[in-house]
Image (cartoon, rainbow, N blue to C red; front, side, top):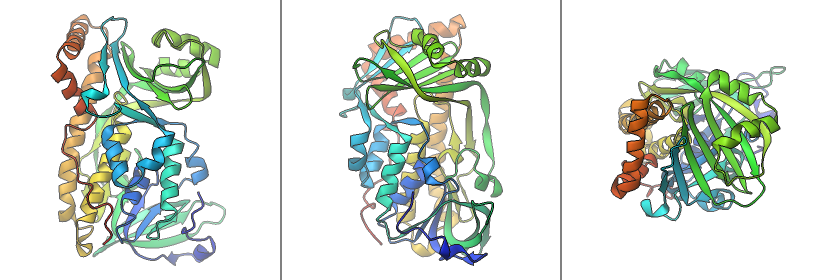
Length: 423
């Protein structure tokens, strides 16, 4: 993306160059980093948004995400939802099933008291919407494509050393910030450099991700279908398409991902709703391993870690991006309610750490339990699963409680009253 307020190449020819100091430097301009910048765009604070991947390449990512109602509230609070809504697909029904077991559980909007259970948005659409909103934010400067190579705390400032992404003509610059936010993904070089440890494990599963075209209009249903090999999410997209996230043991996932389109559809069809007739695979398929991870601390000296850089979970239930957006919401509120002279102080950031660590730990633990409970064929656990499905279908208050937990509405939410107020 070319931004009207991004630094020109000419302004960074000198090497090294001192860039204007900022209040908050956000490293990583994926959806979580962009959302945090949008939340702070009316704050009067100076914000730097640093991204190593050119936007032309970043916006070609083919992912799609289930957006929970909490994420909608956050996007509404920062003035994004009205622009995003025409490009996302609401779904009013979630079907939960366990293999060939005939008993199915359905979640409806009335279980949440909302107009839809959730929404599905494609990565490029969400990212481009957020980028477009930031075009008019005078207090946000893009540095892209630039990579952070060091972060050193010096008194009341952190000093970032940046290097341009052009290996033929590398340029170096220094940027001072009161607070540095790492939103640079699951492998987060910045998190590792700052010495923040993570705990967790890898599953013996990978996810095959594919997009399907369906010839005839379908009911707008999101599916969570459990099989002994792992869960399968089937999400409706705009344009009579579906996004499939199929969890399989590593070897099976690699074999399935390598099939041609016709063979892939033939392999997939028995696992889908029989009403999905005349399906075709479109676009590239991708595969990624699954894991659970959470950092031991979300904060350091003038440093905060959020999104996938702070936690990773199994994709069951579509929690990943939603947890990152809740991080951005809570951190934005912490920043907006902290006096500028205390911005970045570790003591003032501990409330954010305490709130997000335990809330994320609950959700990570729940997704881990779901995957372990449903991804096997051991008959005692099969009986337990069937009992759980019966209870969810029979006891409406329990069903509503589980859905509210999975969509984040059961946990305390930050306020959004500060977003429209400038300092």
